[in-house]
Length: 77
Image 1 (cartoon, one colour):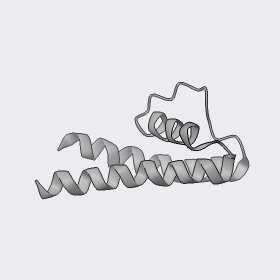
Image 2 (cartoon, helix red, strand yellow):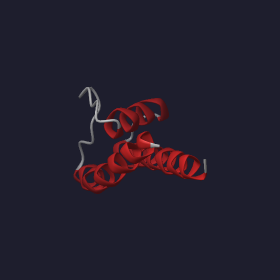
Image 3 (cartoon, helix red, strand yellow):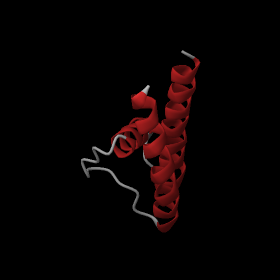
Image 4 (cartoon, helix red, strand yellow):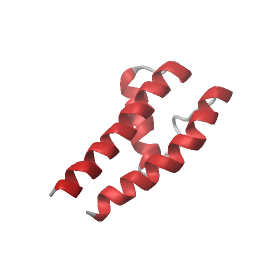
């Protein structure tokens, strides 16, 4: 049970950090930022929102590698 809780906290933290970064770096509103984070982390990526600035893409490169693996691990539990 503890592993599941930790994995979910990591997944929520990854989505939250992506939401804040999209808001700050890309200037999206909160709902669009959350939508971008969830679709990116779950690898759905519809393409209607994306990181477009250089700083946003640099963040997304590292963030997606870490957060996609963290969310995949959460689904294993």
